[in-house]
Length: 203
Image (cartoon, rainbow, N blue to C red):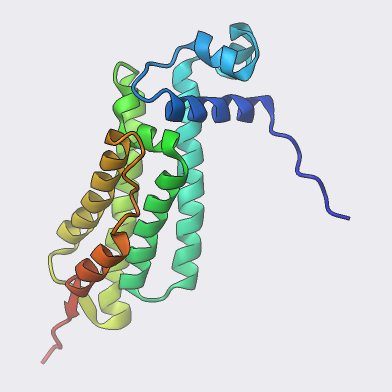
């Protein structure tokens, strides 16, 4: 006998509704009143779970961080080599945004216009953390495999993140019609072929 999945908590329902509104109401500013109607509760009920809309956005950002880094940890455990590691991390980011259009707006930052600067800083820190993870993978490649990036580590990690961020931006700008994974497999094959070179052997 299978165990039934527990229903989402009210807090989870609020965050799910907010993510759905970010997807369906692209370009519109989301108000507490509209969110309360979406959830089917009063505004006072929303405030019992979140003291402000900023806290709701922070809840979504925390969900993104937890989901991505849990899966990145799994990639690092299961994939030994640097180039496949980088490829799977980038593909994870693109697939996650494709499956979660509302959250891609949050990552793209446009929905945070007019919101507290704290939220934009959280998104900035999330991307910085992702770039730092790529740097670590690239640095370890020389020790583990005898390869180093063709460009300096920082420049290489930045190039990879720029590819992902550009695709997320295109996805949001197209109202989710231009999928971030479109052409990615072929483009990654081209990019990854130039990514690394043999490290020089000491005399």
